[in-house]
Amino acid sequence: MFATKRYRRGNAKGLTVTANRAAHADARASAVLCKDRRPRAGGCGPYASGVSVKKLAATFVIAYLSGCVATAPTRPSLAAKTTYQQLGATVYSPNEQGWFLMQSNGRDVAFARQYGSKDDSAVANTTVFRVVGFESDRAFLDYIASEREKLDDKTRFKILNVSNEQVTFKGASCLKYRGVSEDHKNNGIASTDFQYLKTSGYICRHPANKAAAFQMEISHRSNDSAFPDALLSIGQEFFDNIQFSDQGPK
Image (tube, rainbow, N blue to C red):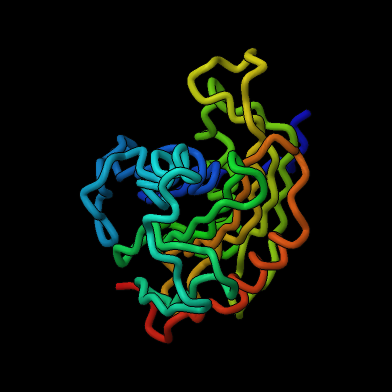
């Protein structure tokens, strides 16, 4: 059952917007729409990175996590709260052992680990992208929510539950979201071979740059539809530790 609030669409002049099934899904989380309403690989302005239009916040996470158990020991585990600089923010790795770095390129930062059984995995990630053409915070966040819903891959993901709430977090106007979906990968939406993908996070209008959106998310993939409470707590601490820069991304 799809449970989410309807959002009206804004009148944007041009934007880069995120459609997310988390850094866990596959290359989908930073779809770019430019002024002519056509997608552009890598974006149409600042924060463009030359990656695919369907680039995810952590491009390499999906391919890697498919073999997470076998290969994770070959990647060094990070010290808790290792610091990474990102456009518009300082990001810290989760405050526990066992996480390793998947990507850090200035625009995106992603950490991953096995969490639960050998087939279960967790990802904590951030990404920054442009959304231009909106004066009010409400219109800005309404449009992001609308685009996220439209850009979901309904041939792969069966959405079970989605919630969106506009909140103030870290001094910024944010869309707080939670979601549960079935990820059928390439097996077809009617297949019985799938895992549950749970996501929780915020997409915030950067307090120092109103044309920049900053997304932070924790996600979990497993055969259980419940989001582990302990992982949600780890995710919230991950969010709390992020520090927005005073000048914002340029």
